[in-house]
Image (cartoon, rainbow, N blue to C red):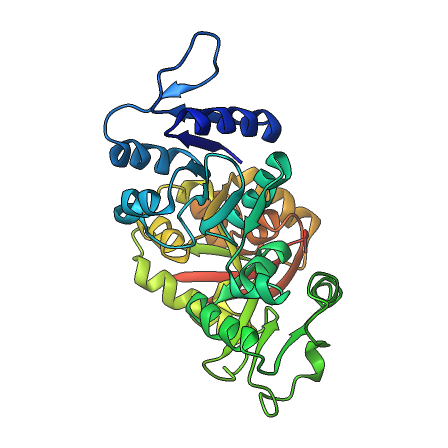
Amino acid sequence: MNVAIVTLTEAGLETGLRLAKGLGGNVTVYTKQAVPDGIEAKPVEGRLRDFLGILWSRHEGLILIMAAGIAVRCLANYLESKYRDPAVVVLDDQGRFAVSLLSGHLGGANELARRATAVLGGEAVITTASDVRGLPALDLLARELGLKPSPPARLAAVSAALVNGRRVGIWAEEPWLSRCRKLAPELPCFHMKSFNGSSGWDAGVLVTALRLTDPGPRWLFFRPAQIVAGIGCRRDVGEGQILAALGRALREAGYSRWCLAALASMDIKAGEPGLLAAARRLGCGLKTYPAEDLAAVLETRPDLAFSSTVQAKVGVGGVCEPAALLAAGRGELIFRKHRYEGVTIALARAAWW
C-alpha cells in the first residue's frame, strides 16, 4: 500500500518517522514543522485542506497524526464512496491510539490501523460493526474470493441483517463453497444445490454464475467474472444493439451479466465504436485477435461454426467462437454461435476458474 503520513507537531513528526520506519515499503512522511537536515520528511505545502486533497488522489492510505476533528473537516469535501476513497487512519501524536476513520474494509484502514499500533505499541480503534462482533465483512469476503457483489447496493442491507443477529446464510457452488467455509466459519454455508428459496432465512448470499430468480431485497449474489463473450458484428453496429444481443445470449445460456470478464473479437473490430462503448458500459475489457490466431483455433476445433461468407469478407471463417475461446484461455465453450440482428455471440467459461 502506498501510504502518506501527515504530521502537525514536533511530537507527531517523531512518531511519524518511527512509524514510517516500522511500516517499511512505500511510505512518505509530510510535516508542518521545519524539516531538519538529514530527516526523511517533506513539507506540507500551503493550506492543510488543499494539501490533503492532493494526497487523497495519490495515495492508497493516509495516516493523519492530528486531532480527528481536523482530519474530518479537511477531508469532508473529498469523500466519494467506500469503493473509491483511500484508507484513512487518525493517530494521536504520542502513537497511543490509531482510529480507523474511513474505508475500514475495502480500503484497508482497519488493517492499516492494526499495523500502525503493532509498530508503535498503541491500540487500534476499530468501529465497523462486523469487526466489533467478530463477524466476517461481506465486502471483504467478496474481494477475498475474487467475486463481484450483485447488486452492490444490497451489501449494506445484508450486512445490517448479519450484525443485527438475523439468520443469514451462504449458498455456494464449488470451489467457492470450501473457500467460504474457510474464510467465514462464523456463517452457515451450504452447497448451492440445496438452496430452495428464502423461507426460514432473513438474508443470504448466493455464490453462483447462474441466472436465478431474485429471492428478495436482503439477498445478494456473489458473481465470478468467468464468462467471456465472443462477438462478431457488422461495421457501425451500435452499442445498444450489441448490448441487447449480449443480454439475450446470457439469458438463453442462463448466466448473469455480472459474470462477464471480457468481450472478444477480431482485431479489425478493435476500434469499433459500438463495441468499445458496450465494453465500457459493462465494465469489462475488449480483447481482439488477428485472423491467423482465430484460424488456428478453427483448425484445431473442426466442431466450431465455419462460414465461407465470413471467410471471404474478413479472411477467417469464424470470429465469435474462436475469439471467445482465446480470451478464455482455451476454456470451455458453453454457448455456441447465435445470431441476433447483425451481431453474433458465443460464450466461453474462462480456464482460470
